[in-house]
Amino acid sequence: MTKIVLLGDGGVGKTSFLKSIRQGTFPDRYCGTVGAEVHPHLLGGRDVTIWDTAGRNELMGPQRETYLSDATICVIFFDLTHRKSYTSVQEHYNFAVKYVPDAHFIIVGNKSELPRVVTNTNFQYITTNNTSYHEVSIKTGEGMQDLLNAIQQAL
Image 1 (cartoon, rainbow, N blue to C red):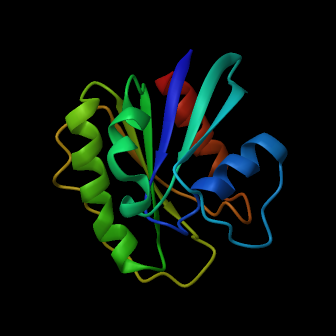
Image 2: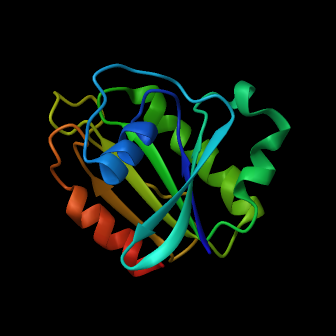
């Protein structure tokens, strides 16, 4: 079964993305993930497991390596309205590529419906060709189909 791991700081939309594709809903309140939650899902006709990981590295602890083990796709989220979450993308990417260098990486700038703080989305540190970038609004659905298509193509 294909393993997809959702990474990124807290509050960037990882759990909202999961709820959006699994239930077709957008949560009306923030509820942080502790550790990781594993969800089976049918995506593009294929069975996958989606690992929704905690946003705070200190909450994930030494289990982070386990969460990444055997991942085929790593989706790294950041908030277009919060510069710190953007600068954290490099940390999440560097950590993940160390454990799953052959994974496909998809970087997602979320909250495109809001006034943005992050305007330059140049990821010069990315060292793999298996990477794509997408901007979405999980809340409004804008860009979600393109993101799902990219994930399905990487399966």
